[in-house]
Length: 352
Image (cartoon, rainbow, N blue to C red; front, side, top):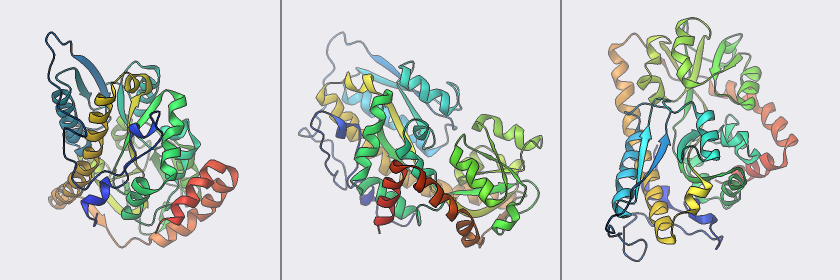
C-alpha cells in the first residue's frame, strides 16, 4: 500500500462513536497515550482480572494476531490489570460465522471476522463484498476511515448484539488454482472455487463463469488436496501462512476484491466499561489499525519472496479488466435490489 500511515488514523470511527453523545472525532497522526485522552489506571488492591476471549481464524504469524496481542497487553496494563484479552487463533473457538454468533450471544467477548459475516445481519456491509467496488487499496482505506456514512453502517450492528470496534486492513484478494494459471476471466470457466459463505461471492463466481463452493477456512486445504475444489481466492498472507501454495501452486493476481476485516466486541461487554476504559479501548483500537497496515505490507513482501524456491507460478499482468466487465452486472443487480447497499455503494463512488 502506497500511502502515508497518518491517513489510517484520520476520522477513525470506533465503538466509542456510538455512545450516547453520538459524535466522532478524528485521531491524530500519532496517537499519544496522554492523561487528557485516557490516563493510565493504577491497579487497585485486590483487583480481580476479567478475562475476555478473542477468536481468530488465522495463525499466530498473521499480522492481525500479532497486533491484537499487543492490543491485549496494552489494554491490560492501562486498565491496571482489570482486563485481559486472551487470543484463540486457528479457529480453536470455531469458524468466523460461529464466533460472530458467540459474540452476539455473549459466549465470547471478541472476534476478528471478515466483512461477509456482519453482512449476514446488516445489509450495509454487503456493499463491501462486491468485486471491484473499490478502485484500489488506497480508495478503500480512505472510504473506511473518512466517509460519514460509515458511522451509520457501524451503528447498525448494535441491534444485533455486537459493536464494530474498528476496521482492520485485510489486503487485496486474488485467485489461486491447482492446475493452471488464471490470465483472464475466460480461464474461470467451470472452475470450482472456494469462497466465503456469502451470497454475493456465489453470484460473483457465476458471473465469472465458475462455480462457487462456500466453506470455512479450516476445511480448505483438504478440500483443495482432495479435488473437492479447483482453487480458492484470498490474500497473499493467507495463501502463504496456510500453506495453500502446497496444493494450489498457481497464484494469479486478479485483485478482484478488497474486503475489510472487522474487530468486533459484544455490545453489553463494551457498555460495561467505564467512560475512561472506553477511551482507552478506543485509543488502542485506533493504534491497531496503523500497526496492522504497516505489518501487512511488510509481510506480503517477505512472504511472497519465500515462494521463490517453491514450485509456485506467480502470474502478474492478469487481464483484470475482463474480470471487472464480467461482474459489472452484479453491481447493478445488488444496488437495484437493496436501498442500504445502494446508499453505501454511492458513497463509495463519491470518494475520490
